[in-house]
Image 1 (cartoon, helix red, strand yellow):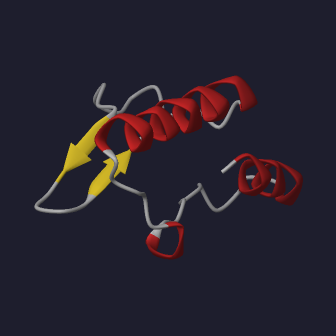
Image 2 (tube, helix red, strand yellow):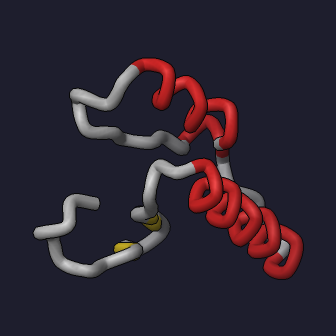
Length: 71
């Protein structure tokens, strides 16, 4: 998230959730850990086929690939 944007970390709709986090590997791994824990505790599986991540258009390809591997 750009530093000038509002300090939000998620948005929830009827059956969708948008999560915001840093693209740093530590942040991404932490988010994935929380999502796996959610699946275990709620017994609700996150549909990977319907999941996607968005990045700023100027993010280097190497970083995009790293995020793809982590998620």
